[in-house]
Image (cartoon, rainbow, N blue to C red; front, side, top):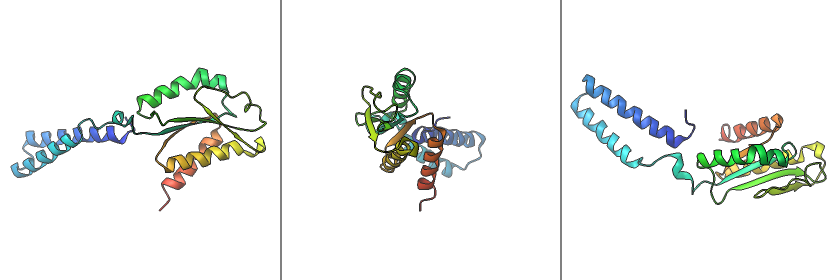
Length: 176
């Protein structure tokens, strides 16, 4: 099942059309009501022509966050870079405004070695044991999400994934 609201809306429109046709065929709807619902269906079909996630490509901004303390450059280059780009492109998530950011703590083992084309490196001052890079990722990811920017996270750190999920849930579900 698609997780995109535009594609889901198209599926729902087809379901509505099937239901109306079923009622029409079975005689389970009066002529006046049928005319009304067929008119609504025609209006919706016209409004939703070409309405899918693929029409978002030029409008969507995306930011890819890389936890450089848990993902090496070679691992990103060999395993993730092409997959992320392909996934994002196929789902209408990449545009000219897209950013790719990698985060590490200054003086940590990966900070000096992390260089990849198209990736801006964010060196965070502080002690690597204090989750400084993770804190910065969470802060910036939430900020970008608040601005309607699609965010993708590349990390092996389950704790960071859980923390971001919790933050997003608290912000987007329970915020009144």
